[in-house]
Length: 68
Image (cartoon, rainbow, N blue to C red; front, top):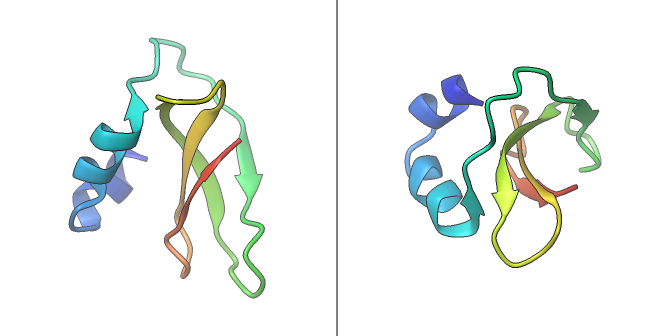
């Protein structure tokens, strides 16, 4: 997700506002984006601030964020 943060304007601020940083674990699951027609994968970007979930970012055409 670091590449996505540098490539997408405003994404760093969005993540900072919605999530807390991940721990030092280098191994994270990757999910297929559920958005119809989007070929992207979801990458862990932090822990959701308000819910018990991972905050993930799509690297595909939809560029959405999700909670997993």
